[in-house]
Length: 239
Image (cartoon, rainbow, N blue to C red; front, side, top):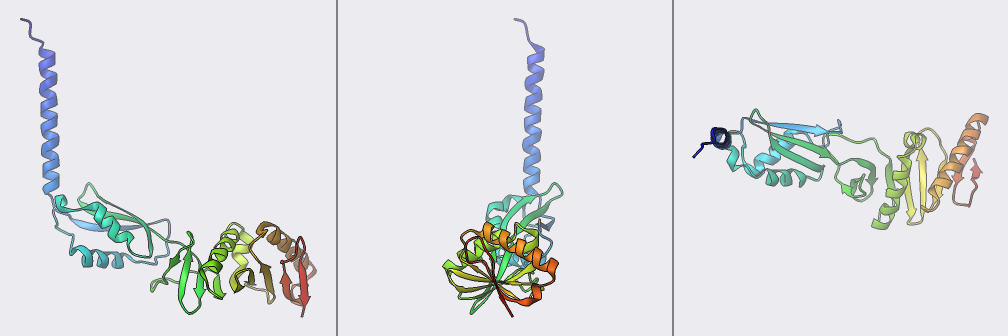
């Protein structure tokens, strides 16, 4: 009987590699966490700090340093971080050097509600609490705060954020009722009556054309109210 030594060598190599891999995994699982690394992704303005995240983890799990890796439930830690109302998502993993690392994406506010309750409206149209660490420079929302009104405000703010001119200049939005919204500008004294949220593209296009001409004519200071409520026209009330 002829012996195939190449086959035996290959089989021996597989056994050795498998054994080394299993041994390496066992040794790695027995190692302890050497430290915790927190990284905030995409947003440099911290509504929740690294210290706050560490405190949250200690309150929930105790100190995670020196804990054996095999005892860590990474998915559970992720969910604990994501339960914080400033956090949109979190990714938790172990680094090669033995650190417990977390990459955190914060929620992004697009408007600040100033009513009986004070909170942010975030990029997904959800309520977001104010932060003790940082105050976002976003339009201030006042007036009759209702869920229906905030849904319309969300549409308006989303449109504003697609336009550099509007985003730079609009600093406030007032809700008179659920179909009547007013805008306030950074440097102008007049109020803009937007009306409802229908035809936003047309309304803002008309307004920008009016603004460009009035700015060129140096007449912006002559107006008290600028109304965009009527079809395809801008109606102004002088002071």
